[in-house]
Image (cartoon, rainbow, N blue to C red; front, side):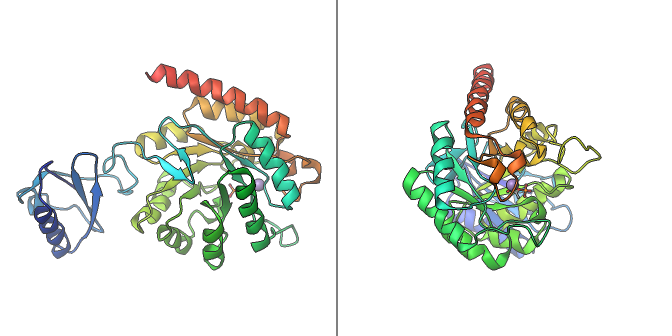
Length: 338
Ligand code: PEP
Ligand code: MN
């Protein structure tokens, strides 16, 4: 349930409502709005009786929340959330490109790619220092050395960096170096990792699990918001299907559903969906057309030598073309929305 306070509600009235919520056995979550305060009633096992709070001084409305993902839903927070990553904004009219290699391999490699993608318009640099690999024999990432390289790239280029926290053991380290913490598809339902991300002051990029429903994805985001971190960006990166022509199947029909259900920004990752370079540009165009707030794209200056995901990494020139096309599509949608 959402208790919307009157515009002129006093702090005493707000405090009294919060106290009543707690005394009724629920958790209270103040949700400041532009003009008025709202109080979310959380951790209720069944429906909450509106009569408990509706008549209290200062309460304008008691609105039942029907969705299981409460803080993530538009029922509780109707307006689009804009997430800040360093100085870069993601969501609601801001189109954000996150680009870089799959894995951080060396400072030279990262700087060359970062400079190229920045020149093409990328605002955030991506690169994994801790890599989730199917085989234990594959390159696992440079670890802390990779994080230091990312910090150096930020220093040299001014681009904020997003990188994956593979588990709770490395979370503190990643949080220390990164501007945005990625939770990968394989970890979307790693609940201890989600809870740890909920305690972070850094924004989180939450990728959709490769066989997760939209509800499971939004519930995963709910863990992070419930923990106190509202700066979550959702990322559709493709699902495992019977298709053999691509690594995954980019679920673009999920995008309008999630945009309708949730106030959180949604981006797409056509690289991990495609798995092959040739499909990345068309899927990126299609993602922009369904209204994502940004894209995460893998780019490598020597993809044939890449230590991971070389086959799906764009050459820098291809990223230039992609960014140009996407800007044109985004501008068209923005002009239509006016
Ligand atoms: C990645 O972004 O490098 C990655 C491993 O992505 P995903 O978790 O979507 O597979
Ligand atoms: Mn990758």
